[in-house]
Each structure stands twice: as C-alpha cells, then as structure tokens.
Figure 1: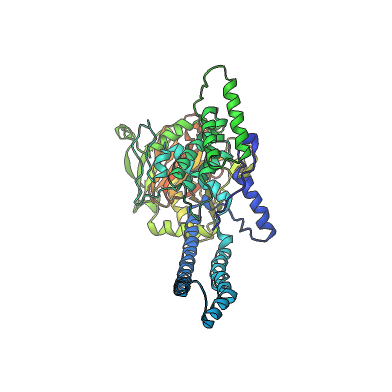
Figure 2: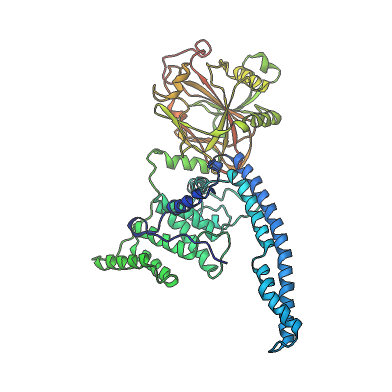
Length: 556
C-alpha cells in the first residue's frame, strides 16, 4: 500500500511549500475531474455546525463499518484460497504428473489468479465506500475550516495560558509559570496524534507565526519519532515533513544552529533532498560568518495591532468571572426588581448588581428553559457567519467567531413576549426601529468576540442606517451554559461575568449626554468547552427621550 505524500517543492526563502499551496496543486487536479467538495466552509464558526459535522462523521463511520465487514468476509475467502493453493504445492513435489493437477494449475494461472488480484468484490466494496463519501462531500468541512479550527486551538492556548504538551495529551494544563490553577478537566481525555499537532503547527507556519509553529511542530516531531517506521492511513504529515517545517521555523525565528541540527536529521531520512541540502550549506555558512556565538532571540507572540488591551483581556478571561472582592462592596447586592411595571409586580426579576460604574446588572432566570430552547430552535435555520462594523462597511472578522440570526417579532409570539419583558425591565421602547430585532448568536470552536463597544464610535458606522441614533443600552441573555470559558469581560472596568444559563446582563452604553461610555469596552472570552448561545437586544436613542431624559453631566 502506498502512503500519500505531498510534493516537497521549494517555498519562500528555501522553506517547504505552504500547505495551502500544496493543496492548491491537489485542488487543480480534483477540480479538473469534478471531485472538489462543497465550498460551504465556516463549520468552525458555530457549535451547531460542528454538531451537524458530528452527525456526518457518524454516517461515514457506519459506512466504514459496513465496508470492513464486507472486506473481512472477502479476506477470509482469500485466506481459504491461499491455504488451498499452499496445500496443493506442499503435496505436489517438484513435478506435475497428474493431468488433473496440470489442468488446475493452468486454469488457476489463466483465470483464478486474475479474479483474485482484480477482484470485482474488492472493487465494489471500495467503490461503495467512495460513493458514500462523495454523497456527503458537500457537507464536509473545507480547508478553511481546518485553518479556523487550528487557529481556535492556538487562541485557547494563548488566552487561557495552556501548555501545548498538555493539550497534546488531552490535558488543559496551565503553561509553566502561569499563576492560576488548571481550569477544565474533561470527562474524557482526547489526546492529539503527531499528525494533529503537525497540522496546527503547519497552519501557524503558513501564517509566518513561528511562535506557535515551533511549539506545535516540536510536539509533532516528538510524537512522530516515537512511531517512526509505522504510519497511519489517515495521516497527511510525516516525521520528515515536521522536521522540514520545524527547521525552517527556527531559521526564521533566528535560531540557526537548531535549524541546522534539524535539517541534518531530516537528511538522515531523506539524503537525496536537494533543497534541504542547500539549506544545510546555507546555515553552516551563516554560522561560520558569525563573529561571535549565536544569540538566540526569545520567541515573541505575534503583535496584534487591533488589540491594545490584550493582557487585561486575557487575565479577565482566565479568572472565569470570579470577583472575590466584589462581595465586600456595599453597593453591590441582590434584590427583586419590579420597576413599577404591572408585568413585574407579581413576578419580579431577581437582580444582582455586578458593577456601578459602568452600571451592569445580572437578572437571573430572565427566561425559562423552554423559552431559551425555543429561541435557539427559531434561530438555528437562520444562522449565518457573524459580521462586525468596519468603518462604513460590515464584514467578517477573525476577532469575532460565531454565527448569528435576526428574529423579528413576527417570527413567533415568544419574541413579542420577550420584547415586552425587556421593555418592562428597562422602561425603554423596544419596538423596531427604536430597538434592533433580537439577535441570536451561537459561538463556534474557541468562539469569541474580542474587546469592542456595542455603541458606534463614528457617525459613519452602519449602526446609524437604522436612523434611530446610537445604541443606548444592551441586554444580553445567556441561552445556554458552558463547561468552561465564555465569560463576558469588561476590560477598563476590570471585571468579568461568567455564563449563567437563562440570565440576562444589562448595561448602558451611552451617558445621559449622548456620549459613549468608554468603561463599557467588553469582550466575549473564548469558549473553552461547551456550546454558548446568547440573545442580544440593542436599544437605540430615538424613542427614549422621555423614558431616559438627557443630561449634561458626563458621568451620568
């Protein structure tokens, strides 16, 4: 059986070709023959899509089981044929004297062996498996999904300060030196294979992110070394591939001596590779030209120009919503909220005041289990990749990984009921266009929304197309629970709120003078484990003139 290998063509600066370019060569071939799967992508952006992918793999698994049963039956028949011919040869001696023996020998060589080697049954079994796969191809994740999933794992690694070695073993352990305890213990440890680690490192390599590529490729090399000499049918990478990419990552990171050592190890397995041989010569020359011992620069995480509050954001995410000092403050308390509205007099809401400046409150049991489930069911068929405002446009962005749907009040009476409940709580007009339709969001693998304001910070923002002013307030309902992660972190105010199923979080985005409250800069921390659903209700300025009168004090 031949192992599938990708061409080791030369990439930029003598490094291996990127995975996207290598697969581009394969893409050209399969496109010519009409075999390219559906380009639906974005499976990784929603846990609902990932659940659907789970069902797809279960169908493939069922078909593979059928294939194995049929093949085992065929193999048993081949074993019968083998034993039969072996027994014939053992009893025959060095010559054939029996005419029947001569006939059966000729018949086997002319006919039987042809049927065995080119077994129609074997072909039918294989074609049956391939046909089952091809029928499901349009629903399979794309290469962009694989990239997105790998970036999600690296995001969780960074935000929660997780050890790569621990992740490879299925453990969510803090990296060395991290001050916080381990934050998640799964019911089942899912260890990663050498090829799993290689693919993550390869995605980082293709992004020229050598901080992450080195850590993951090191783990891949370690695991490939252990299993060298054997290979798995499903693997795409190999020890040679991992050494090749790791060596060049070290070179790009400035560690030439380690790049040389790894390249020399590569040539031990593939001595005829001219590109790597040239790299060895180049590395040796660079080391000889060095007037002093090589100073290896420390690896630095890639700069994130749009995220100037990264350290504060990640620290708040790591605390998982724990605010031990908050309970010592007298103005943070729990109470029943009726707001003077008839809807709430007999069934007041359970309010927990989380913060005063900015004012943030958590309303427990704002919706029931059945209401939360109904909202998710209404949104599921309407989910699309979430977008963000960028200048005057709206676009997809890596700093928001989720899918969302908008539910008008005509979709179901429950949406009307929810709008009335929000109006009773806030005292604000929640009817369109004074408020936006209910937005339901399902976060994806490592789903997050990096620090942002809900209100527009520019008059050119698409939010003003509604012609009802800026977003004055936000009410966000947690429609599900999660096992770990997913907190809502208020960066400048320095606190975070954990996911509390069926609870609603409320805050004002604008001061009474109409200016944005910078203290409301907030983020949805990456979901470490679980399926996070939220519903957002954004209420605008217009229609609230007598419900929340304007003021001149910038602090109000």
